[in-house]
Length: 76
Image (cartoon, rainbow, N blue to C red; front, side, top):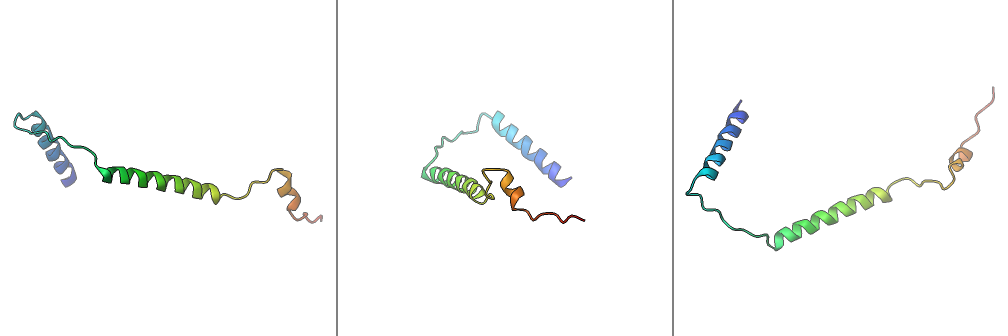
């Protein structure tokens, strides 16, 4: 209940701020830190994908290789 009330108060406050004529919108731009964060995300994402690909088990070229390596089943 507290979360719902606080979200509703925040929503009404933001709506009132946007509708107000006294609100001064600040111009902003992305600096070098945003570029570093994007580069870090890209590197982490690519290294995670490459780690998954490297750690995958070896897939045989011939699917019968795995069947031929298995021990023969004993005949009763």
